Length: 354
Image 1 (cartoon, rainbow, N blue to C red):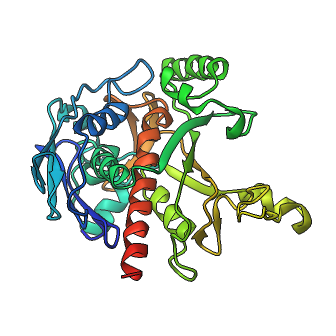
Image 2: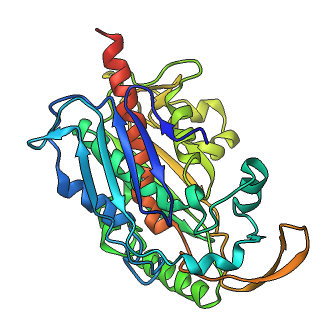
């Protein structure tokens, strides 16, 4: 299986399965001498881990990371950073009912067709549990970029969405509720809705918005390696993501150029920011902001029809511990992938000037 690595100079390679012994990763290209805040890394993992509230999967995992190499006396050495996260609460028998059948909208069928074999316990490599490794790597990338601020939050659940631009919200409030929405009233409505969806044995999708402040000017390349293109790839590589838009996004297509153009101030900043902090594929120093759309979780705790390996229509009952809505736990994953992209481009930009 190819495609287990992400990045160029700052590169992360992950390994492990949802119901294996452990997950882990190797980070190459991290500069030497970066002082590591282990508590900050664990905090981001805790924001992603299962079992943290009543509206997420109730699988209980401590998700404690153990570093094996690349860090000495609290600082990076410049060598490969190796780490593992042990699985402690697998219930693989919950998945025995799908051994010979395929769950709709999961990777089960295509895995069998592509590889002729699959790990049906929780989805194996296609499980969102793999994203724990991304969060570890992303937390280190954030520490490489200490002056850059990454803030993601839930802006929509189903048809409920925030009706204010992010500039009018106190984004720090997002972590004060289990939905991770920076509007307390809307967060309460979203929480109630997710709980009701869970009672129905159903699921619902949503949107995570990310804002990146203090990005240096000049990150990104103007042709194939545009900064927004790499951010799009990063976000679309996250499980359950169905869409990505940055800046004015699809709404910008309805505007006239005279309204959409970001007019300059004398210091090079712009009066508006429809560009989303990126022009010509290169960061311009303004806030980078984007939306990431997540589909409803495919596993329903309901009876439904599907097919088995022989092509027969069979009845299946969803089982196991699953999120009724992934967006609250996806917030730190979105931040992590954004940090990986910016750290990589920061190092590429630095290397080009040597």
